[in-house]
Image (cartoon, rainbow, N blue to C red; front, side, top):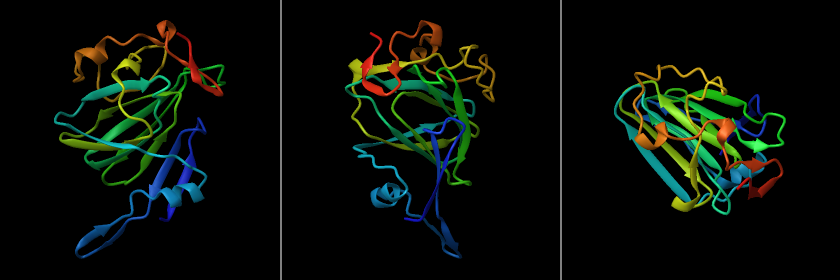
Length: 195
C-alpha cells in the first residue's frame, strides 16, 4: 500500500490518502494495509468495520466516543457522497483540549481520517445518500458509549447545515456540552477517565 499520511493541526489526527488507479474500466485502490500503515508509523489493530448510509444531506452523526476499556481509534472513509468529518480533542491536560480539526472526506477525494483514542468524532453529510465506512480498534460497548453535543458553541465548529435544518437522532441531541462532560480522557493516560 502506497499511502500519504499527513498530520493535521492537531498532529495526532491524520489525513490518509491511499493511491487510486483508474482506467477505462473504473479504478482499483488498496484502501487498507496494516503493513503499509505500520511503515508510516501507524500500528493499530482494527477489529471491526462499520458502515452507515445517510439518506439526507445535512445528516449529523456524533460527536461520539467510547471510554476505556473499550476506547476506539477510528479510520474513516467515504465510498459515496461527501461529509464534513470532525475530531474534537477531549484529553484533559492536552494543549489542544476542546479544540477540533475538520476535513472533507468524499468518494471523489478518496481521503481517510485517522481519529485516535481521546477524541470525540462526528460527521455531517454534504450530499444525499452518503455512505461512510470506518474501522475501529475495539468492539462496540454500550456501557462505554458516550457523546459530546455536536453544536456546543464553545467548540466553534462551522457545520455546513444550521441546527434547525440538521437531521439527527434524539440521542445526539441530548449529549452534554464540553464544560459538562464527565467522561473525558487524560492526556497520556488512556486507561483513565474523569468519572
